[in-house]
Image (tube, rainbow, N blue to C red; front, top):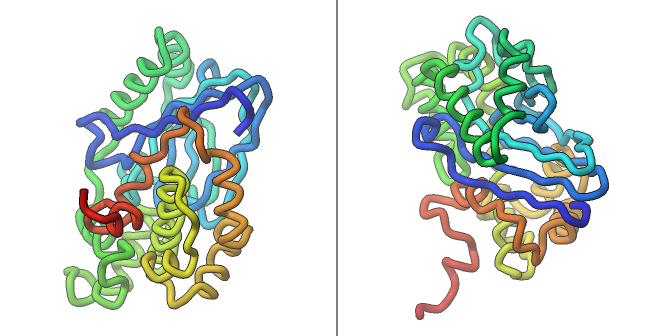
Length: 281
């Protein structure tokens, strides 16, 4: 983060609670920044206020976006499987790793750009974006939604899906690619990595030291070497480098709050390692 920048994640509005995992407002300081996005299984709708909204499809590797100095960004992170309901008739896998103009999503793009840009505050702009998405997203595929639930790092994984879902493995793979943008195995790898990044964020927020070996096991990796291979593949850096970069960007900053985005990925009870192991008060 550049000096003067801030990043605040929040829980979605009630109308989006089942469709989005978090929403955010980001302010860029006096210098432009290269914003890194890493895979998390979902898609993102975002807008630099004054410009047209954009849709970032599900990622299979880290992607950088240049944000202008002095800009304000509002965004919504959609849950895995929701993208298919936003773009009926367009399989989500066609948008994997794509950063597309809102013109490909909303026909009345000029009006939407004005509606967000004319909002009296960034919070009002975010509210308007959430309201638009709540009206635009159709009903997600319920079978895919159940698959996503079982692919979370603390659940059974792909091995249990054939016995739990009323579709064949081939049908499930097709429906996942259409609704999520990737098949079940790729989504499991992505969610597992998201579980690791959540632990990094929680530890940095708590001012705690890193424990990569423990995080690897908690996120579902065989060992730290397995985590290292996957982190290089998905983020382009080692886990230690990822931790150091995140700590340098957000450590100790009161105006950087990512808890709404990472807390649900910490496990069943949504608590960080530090919270679970802290002595009772």
